[in-house]
Image 1 (cartoon, rainbow, N blue to C red):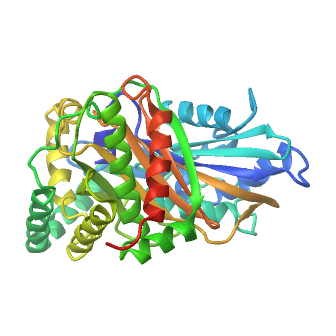
Image 2 (tube, rainbow, N blue to C red; image 1 turned 180 degrees about the vertical axis):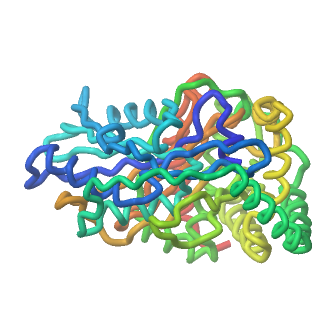
Length: 426
C-alpha cells in the first residue's frame, strides 16, 4: 500500500530533524564517522527493495552488496543560520525522491545552525518504516556500541520458484484468516460510517498538491498539555485533534469558508514498540469527525468519547477496506485519480510518544526532535506530533501552492492549544 501511494506529486517520505548540541564537539568528521557505523548497524538500512517476477508476490528486501554510508550521509553548512533554514532543507529532502537502486533513506548533517547547534535530518521512504520503527532507529543512533564495521553481506539469490511457493503459502494462510478479516472489515465499515457523513465537507483543504513542501513548527510543554487534557477527561491526542480542528476552522474562515466539523485521519501503529531488526510499516488510519464550533470543553469531551469508542474496535479497522480498494485502484491505473479527488478526509494527524529522557549521539546531546510527516493526493496540509524529553513538538507540513497561509495556521494552532489548556472541565 505504501508503494501504491507513492505515485503522487511528491514521494511518500517521512523522517525527523535531530537538533544536536555543539558543546564540546570536535567538528563534523567524528560525528559523521559514528553516524555511518551506527546507521549501518540497522539491517534494513543496508537493504534495497527488489521487484519480483509476476505471480511471485510482493517486492522483497535484499542485502545491498554495494552499501556505502557515504552515499546516504552528507554534511552541509547551514546557508543562512537558524531553524528556518533547517526546515527548508528538510522540506526539500522530503520532496526529493530517494533512489530505489539503493537503501531507501538519506541523512544530512547541517552545521552552523547557531553558535552551539547543528542539525541531523534523516529521511526514510514510508515503506521502509513507520513512526514506531523510526523511534527504534533513533535508539540505535543513541546506542553506546559502535555496531557496524563495514562488513558487507553478499546478496542472496532468490529463485522465481521459491518466491512463487512462498507467495502461494502466504495466500493460503490468508484464506485461513478470512473469517477474522471479514470481522475486521465489518468493523472498518462501521468506523467509516461513524465519520458522520459519507463524504467530508468540500473545502480548499482538498486540492491536488504540487511537488514542493513547506514546514512550520510549534512547541509546548508536554506535561502542561497532559495535565490540561486529563483534568478534562481527555488525552493529549484528544486535545491536539480538537486544537487542529479549531485552527483549520479559523484559517478557512479567513479564506471565506465556513466549516463546522472536520474529518481527520488519525494515523496509528499496530505496535507500541519494535527493534531495528524488525522495522517495516505496521501503520493504518482511523477517520475521526472532530467538531470545530461550539464551547471548547464540550467539543473536547465529544472527541474524547469518540476516540474511546474507536479504541474498543480493532485498531484502524478501516484500513482493511481502504487497503484493498487502494491496491485495486493502483492495479487499474486509477490510484492517482482516486487520491487526487478523494473527499473522505480533510487532513492527517500522527502522534508519537518519544523518549522521555534526553539522548546523546556520539557524545552530542540531542536537544530537540522535530518530526517530519508526509501529505499525498489532495490533502494539502497535515500534522506530525512527537513528545521528547518534556517537549511536545507539532510539525505542520503543507503544499505551499495550495496552503500559502501555513504561518497563520501554525499561529492559530498555538492559540487553540493555549485556550484548551486554560479551559476547565465540561
